[in-house]
Length: 150
Image 1 (cartoon, rainbow, N blue to C red):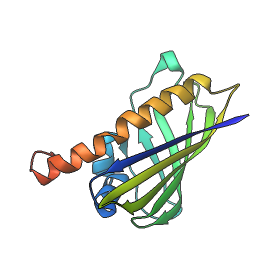
Image 2: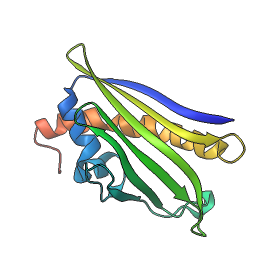
Image 3: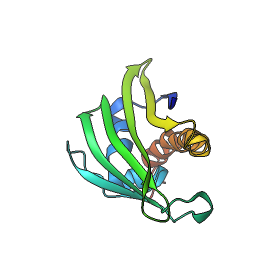
């Protein structure tokens, strides 16, 4: 059986401001990981993190932009693997932004987890997405006040 991560957050900032943190590599690095993302349909890119041998994670996530609707929707593949270089998670990340109540409702749907292969990965990713996305409004506020180093 397949599981999905479904998270919805509300930010006081406009969709255009949140969008910048989903699509500019230097801003994505502040809340997620180093990357070579470009907001171009079909662009292949990587997220890079220190390897985590205890979790059999090589530290590289291979991605490809699947859909991009500026300020509204972004989706990309998310493939990661073990220390042996084999892909063990083949999934899709989808971000949807809705202007709402003078701010932004941000929805994340991350699909492709199986009960047999990914129970621990699912929990780690679910917690990680929640913690990391909550950095976005803080970073935007810091940027507006000139304390963000981006």
